[in-house]
Length: 417
Image (cartoon, rainbow, N blue to C red; front, side, top):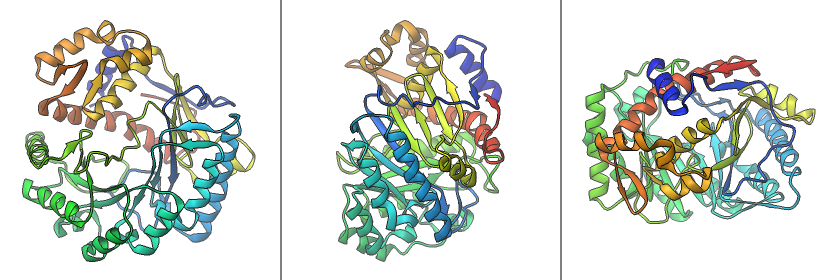
């Protein structure tokens, strides 16, 4: 796998140099110069730890969660005070962990952010199915949350057992969502589980929309090496058949496809914390993307709190992009939406896309991965599958390695990928 990603990286960046992340950071973060900036807040606490989940998380206790949030708010003011006035940003997303475990303090966090930023396109927050009740939802809505994403994974009993999840009370969920409405109600599912069929996945999607969702995300199962999951990966041919079938089903139902794995039943329903040109992250493991650099905070809660307590950044690693590296990053995550607008690339990099990657575009067209119309390159079903297929290699070669190291070292000296 690493050979495939390494060769791709060298070809697209036109250099043999790896992506090098170093234990360094700037004292002044360059977010003020970033238009269309998004915000992200990480709350790492969970009532129980799912063995398939790769994200930064720790077991919840009220005391440790409150202490963490105190430091989180301190970080927000520390960073926000570097910019005079209130910086206009697009969106704010809370991830985890289980952010709703801190429902009592979400408003306090949002109020702190509102002192430094003007959020123009809404606030999203992830929930565990257990959190979907009227009391919690109302607290979140009163705090300013406009979008929620519920991590269902599967309504099917056989897959809940495989994933170590309990059954979902769909009656209570539907009732709560009808009492406390949100602009976007997204439900997350995992596909490519062992022996999962089209009917299994279709049933999950149909049930989600019947319960009050207007957006669904169907993420592929990826077997991270550092998790304790024993779930076997689905073979390539079966995975492609399943992805193509469920994609075609959603399109035939009239759902809008907003990314590789997301579909919405309403035009303005959207939920994505990744497809943003720039973002500024707060909390453990939170990442920030600027014009020429990408940084990631430590995964260790105690180390995070110590750094913030002394008035310093909790940054663990930073990569300073070459221009080609930044282009590859931009193209990879922009393509996640299944389409790339040619003018957006030229506006961002001040150089024509075809000048930089004309040969690769020609190959992608010849292979039937993309089609071009009205200044847009859009993925075909075949292209979307192979994007997913390559993303699996990318995740296991880069993200798996980096997160695996950072789970064990709060501040590693350097990582080369």
